Image 1 (cartoon, rainbow, N blue to C red):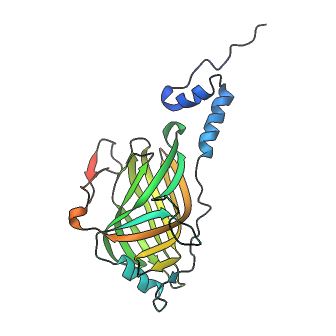
Image 2 (image 1 turned 30 degrees about the vertical axis):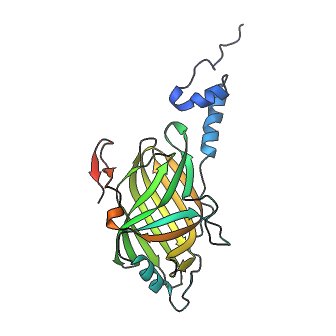
Image 3 (image 1 turned 135 degrees about the vertical axis):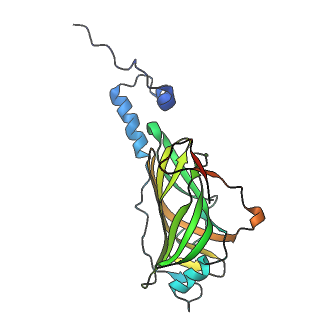
Length: 249
């Protein structure tokens, strides 16, 4: 009997596996599965996140609630600029201007998400601290998203811990599709003098793309003068079609 025909003559679509096809021209079904596993291995981890570290404040006479109110209750709008930082020095790592997460987009394409910061448009008292409305300054593989306004909470606790939580805000990336994003940032140090804070972060989004990441960050707050604000961007309406847009508020 003659050998069965080779399975590697069926090439995957150029849009998803062109690079891998050049690298592995004779890939069989096992080879394709290997490619998928390699792509999945690119997913980030949330293992570096610390949920409630003890908070240190440069003005030792102030507690967590006072410091949070003073720092985040500033006149809006303002921007919180982010970078990957060193936990020992509390300073940005050389060349870093964002925090990041990795994973896969549609068709198992490797994906890197960079979050440069948050632009806070409103801040008001809530039961657990401050409620904020914000937009994320981010891009996925160099492509900025279309996002709805995010609603989050800056939480201060009686045990001298504090954190920022923004959950399930909706974004659409041309490269990824429709996703929901969750972000947690614990705070271990506040400098009221420098208007900065540090701590641990984790970022997760899921939907037609799946990405996660965690690490240590530094954040610096800067006021936004109205004349310097960027024009309003559009966002895909949650539950609507990709072509349906609503203006960011």
